[in-house]
Amino acid sequence: MKTEFEPTILAFVCNWCTYTAADLAGTSRMVQQPNVRLVRMMCTGMVDPKYVIKALLSGADGVLISGCHPGDCHYMNGNYKARRRVRLLKEILPLFGIEEGRVKLTWVGASEGNEFAATVNNFINEIREIGPMEARSMAIV
Ligand code: FES
Image 1 (cartoon, helix red, strand yellow):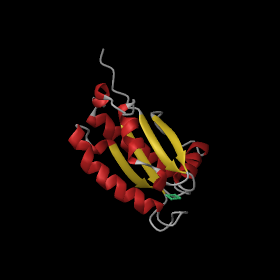
Image 2 (cartoon, helix red, strand yellow):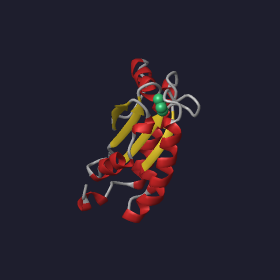
Image 3 (cartoon, helix red, strand yellow):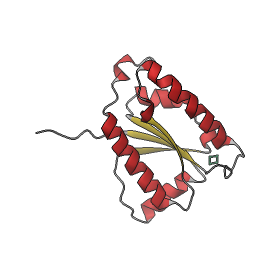
């Protein structure tokens, strides 16, 4: 009997927008797959690329970073910093044999519970397509 791969996703979400949207999705009983562990950050600008790499080498098959829409960051430009960091990280990951598709940055506003549920479900399916993270055995972090 073949069992389908169930990815583990770590999601760094900003307190002010995406965490609130996740809460809204939950209280509105929107259908979400149970593969995501949320890490509540004050802003996506706080997500150090080291956290992402450590997550991937420690058991996560994919990492989602999600925060306020451009122009809505509560700390002015944290999400722009996150966008620049993720762009660089996606260039570096393949050098270590890690598919860049394992990391995703999205913007989900506080009132967008539907969008949060859809984003999470889509990302889980994308990671299912990529397959299990195989670089764990070379964990050096
Ligand atoms: S406060 Fe939400 S991304 Fe900065």
